[in-house]
Length: 212
Image 1 (cartoon, rainbow, N blue to C red):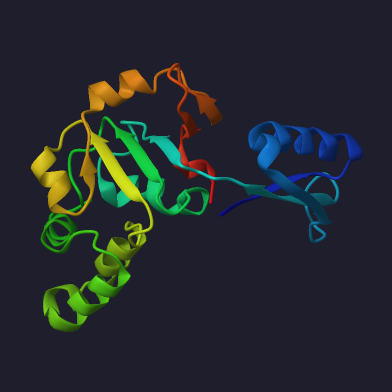
Image 2: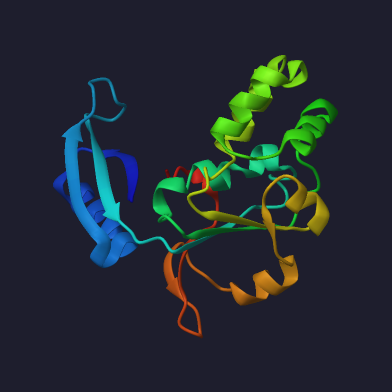
């Protein structure tokens, strides 16, 4: 599986070297390549560079933290899914620490549709759109349901602060206790970590920052 990052930086050898070193620290032995190409003209303060790294990762487990002040629903919180899916190997697991998540949709209609149809994967959602006028009439909800599913490739374990096990499992996710999982994955840094009992995990403190 591949993780790709695009980072804009000012045009200087020093800047390029600093970024390359940072990417090497993030990817460690999995770093496959770093490619630097010019950005189009017109970047303020001179020409720029675009740096693309390709990091090879077994990605057995990825842990994402959702800031409770920003993420109160899976409608927003599922950035944890679609911005990390390329980092997660087949058969792996995504653990979402979500202390502020209390609902599925940002409004009552979306919340009800997510609860009714769930994150079941693209083929199931497309079939639901064909069969269910209610979902067919709200294609943004259908798209969200597809983006928030792993397509059966890896497990998604949500650890919500304000939703029950039945609610989480009812939409197709696995459930884990927030306090237990927060204690287990305390003090992680962005990137690769090894827990005290030897588990390797990739930690993302904010999926909005652009990991894809």
